[in-house]
Image (tube, rainbow, N blue to C red):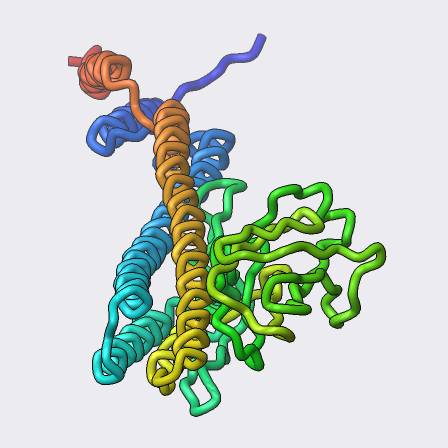
Length: 407
């Protein structure tokens, strides 16, 4: 038979250790109540702490997306504002062109209109070289540290690049930045956007361009979307030639009277006035042209002499071509604005997605890390009572000794 001997020192140490453990548990519960978090250190719950860290990174990424979206929205709104100004400028240029074409103006009046057209052109160049709030050139693509458009005697040239950044605004969603200036100002459709009409510079009659367009897409497509010439073999007869000037086989000819609409190969052109033998009018696929050249050509035409009937006819035809090109440019700017508006709408949708994702992540994070206040308060009261009881018990035990029985 063996006897276990419990010394007073061992008894003291055991009870002190128990008291310290009780105090540590109580302090830990107090910390969770004061901080509102049940996981303050990875040791508190390693799995929950790891998951919470991952969610914190996701929330920080959402904040970065939010900042990206704000920057992109500011640039797209600035693009929208600039294109609206450009549209207003083209509307004014169109009004001036109609005035120059219809009114019996003097050469001085036309020169005044030409000066205003050139001012509009310079204003568009300023819009094309505009900057954002950070001083970066809006329409320069990735080369946004210098003016993307350079004016020279030969015309305006684009020195930016074609890159269009994609900016992340939500998880798995990136939207395009502002359009490169080359797409907005330099590659502008002419004519009606599909075909364009013009009068040969060597014409000596008074034939005036009128409405034109594609009337049979299939027939025109069968030609390979080719261009054609309407050549006058006499003041009252015409024939259709290919773009190189060779008459078509079988021949396509017809009579002409002022106001006639000539239909051929799926195309049509209305002419007025009295063309001379050898005069040529061209209908061909629309080509891209920068808006600055369109306005330069218009101003040059208005400044050219118009003292004779032939000179006036050439001027009228040049104004007609400019009017068609300006109308096409207006439609082009509207399309660019619509594309920017779609991206702005995408930013709004991305914001709603970020907000929904943030709510979900924060709720999950709260479940992982936050304190259940009712449960923690109950546990604190229980631990406090247990600690008080342990302290009273220790006091009673500490007061016992062998000398109590010897007295």
